[in-house]
Amino acid sequence: MKNKIKILRAEHELTQQQLAEKVDVSRQTINAIEKGKFDPSLPLAFKISKLFNMSIEEIFQNE
Amino acid sequence: MKEKSKPRAELTKKNTINLALWTGAWLVTMAISSFGSLFLWEGNSLLSGLAILLNFLVGIGMILANIKHLKGLDELQRKIQLEAMGIALGLAVVAGLAYSSLDQTNLISYNAEISHLVILIGITYFAGVLIGTSRYR
Image 1 (cartoon, one colour):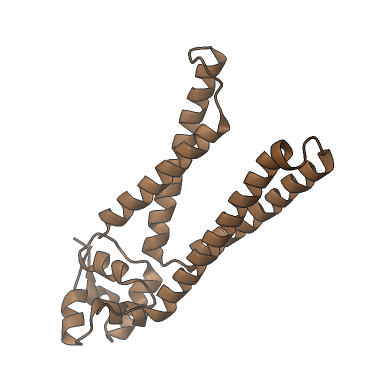
Image 2 (tube, chains in turn cyan, yellow):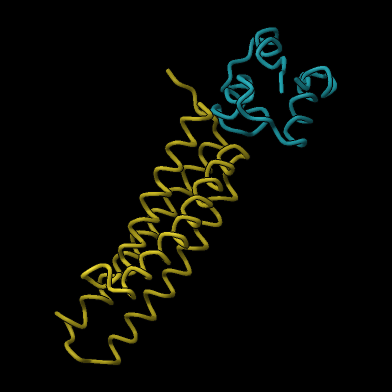
């Protein structure tokens, strides 16, 4: 699954660690999601979309 | 300097230390129950029974600490653990039964010991966690 987390993170001037803290996961998890190696659960996707004030579909796209 | 994810990282660290302490305590009670009857209280059934009971109870504590540790992990960390445990369990069943068959059919000259299986599970689980962690890096 592709996603725009890296772009959104840069726009909001957040490090992976800061984003990880805000959504209560490890930095490794954010890194794996950004690289498309790990698809987040629905609750985590909701947390991320809420944080960036966007819909899940705007952030995550099925390849 | 690397920042720390306070709530998650601290919880994981605390739970990992807790699990390590319980595992250490379990190993100590295992050693006491195994070697105590040989070197400390030769032939005393009551002390042997109490040592085994203590080892069992501490083992329960270790299992509960492991559950707490798993619950404190985030979803990716839990997935890595689950995959490692699944591989370790699968290999333990397959290799354990094959090993037992080798013993029963006398294809190996020594007795199949449960400790060999425990070592195999430990190594497989550890390798599984390392491979899983590097795969999602």
